[in-house]
Length: 114
Length: 117
Image 1 (cartoon, rainbow over the protein chains, first blue to last red):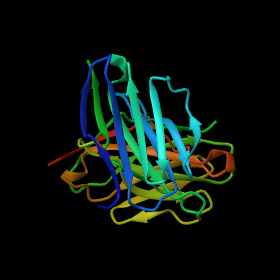
Image 2: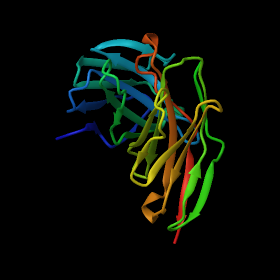
Image 3: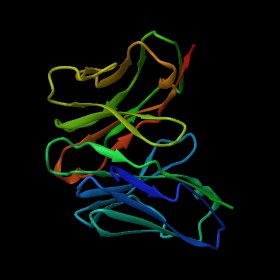
Image 4: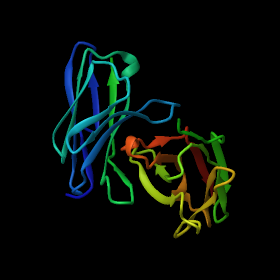
């Protein structure tokens, strides 16, 4: 596989459930990101991992918990979510420190909290 | 703080015509990059074109060109010869290249483009 792969593509969960979103990149990049895209809002940067270290947490509620075990994998653990957390969650990766700072995005996980 | 503004929520264009999508930005950094992405209904963000702040020539990629006016802080996307498959949401994005800004790609609100047959 190539590019950035996100699973699952769709997820419906109750407010008391615990679930995880997975992102995997096959590009050899050293930085990975989680973005949230709600209806009629710009994409919001949630978390940044650079060389597996979290370098940015954009005031995200603690019910979202990221994990980056290595530079190719990124998870977003979800628990006790609210209906307003329903959104498209996009993962991206980039190669930092080499001039061109292009980002490659996955297809996203469309999350519905009921 | 960096900021991206797209003032056109929706645009229509006739097939085979050209269309310009507006984007203005605000930054105090001298070194930054500007991006345009396309998002079809499937949700994937597809990279279209990149312009570095020090690039003297406007970027072009096939039917896409970026009209970069640095003094006005604008980075408009021009799509020539529109096709039905160009119907999608288009996002302008920017990141500053300072060492404290690793990974901060910030997006505008997006413009929905519909191409009419």
